[in-house]
Length: 320
Ligand code: CP
Ligand code: NVA
Figure 1 (cartoon, rainbow, N blue to C red):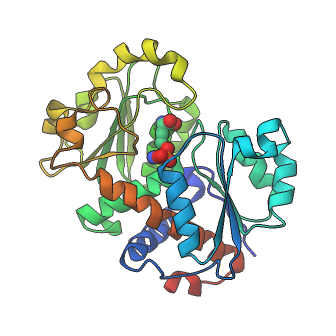
Figure 2 (cartoon, helix red, strand yellow):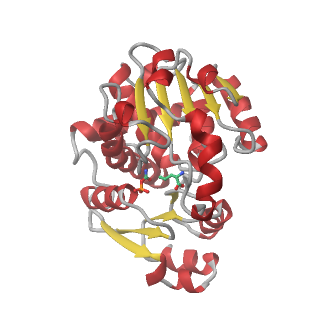
């Protein structure tokens, strides 16, 4: 038995990430390719923060994998009243086949993983959003020539470079062997330890990491441009303070013009038109955001199937 978790993007190696992405594309072709939770076994899907895509894609995905999605909101559980994460892990691990959790601190999913004997999946923390990156890379693969073409591509992320999406593009892109550029204003740049990890992993996989305050330098010649909200969940009190410094990092037609001619645009959503992205871009011909949202379903089914295949040491689950 090999218990694996997905807590941050570098929990998968280059080859493992490719395997999961290829499986994600295969699930898009055949929704019932593999049914590891047939029985049904339950998967806990817990939300300490709001969600539309993650909630609907995990609930639908677990059901399509033959399982029962046990969707739990913070308000409806003892976690919300301060029950220790370790105790929650010990209980859920005896009843469920996997635990998916959207929460605040990364330490919380790490504690859950330490005490669980089933795979734990980070469905977004303050630091990382690895499930989104799998969906985003599947989307690039769909539009740009397959999973094997990801290595050597340039991706650029503009906006709040200190948030979970920025950190996940750095690590996930490094694992994929991409040239990753992130740009944000001074004071909103990525955490140094994450940049260092990304640089080390990128160099192992033939990619590179650029962190800059210059949005045009980041976007130049990119194959895919990403952005995200300037105000993440939990930061709502900073709304007024955050608006102004981010204005030069808006993804608009001028930014798209310096990327490759056939560049695509992605946004994890929810999007705020007129803030981090103009309607001309997100609703324009280079935008693939609806494919991206759909890939949350396929990529997460692939990830859950892959994690269960490792745990059961049953590669046949991956073959369909
Ligand atoms: N992109 C994403 O995670 O969306 P939700 O917050 O709606 O789940
Ligand atoms: N950075 C955003 C992502 C939402 C999917 C947030 O954490 O709110």
